[in-house]
Length: 160
Figure 1 (cartoon, one colour):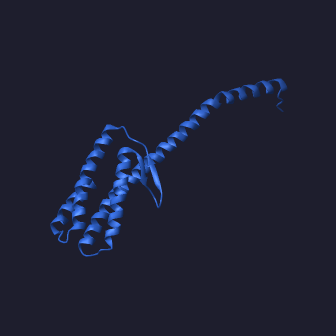
Figure 2 (cartoon, rainbow, N blue to C red):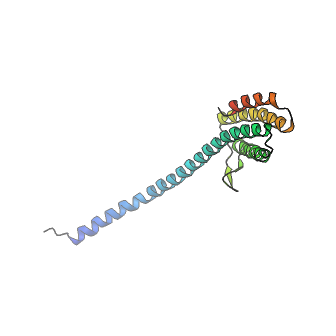
Figure 3 (cartoon, one colour):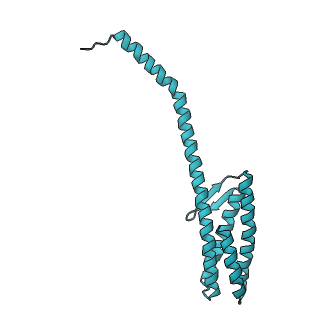
């Protein structure tokens, strides 16, 4: 049978308590880092989702423009909404701010200072300007056959 001396039990309990107490600030730091890490991961996931949606919107706008060209005037409203969503999201990805996200919601994006990301976003903005001018010409034109080839070419360069 093991007996524990009351004095040693109190002394051991005090050492364990001191040890646990000494870990408390470290545990707080680890928990804080985990929370910040989770927030960073959530922000990264949001950016990946928005970038993926941008690719999908280019494909959707190309399809809607072709539908419009074939005489389906109901595609015009969806095309204009997709253009607006793409433009607002591109602006938020470049400069920070609100981007349309989910139904009737927005996501607030931070400003980026990463030179490589800014250079890539500038290139996307340039291609988007070219693509959008072709879309607008298709919307305004009754004979958009030559524009169809330009639209498909610009679409491919944007989704890469």
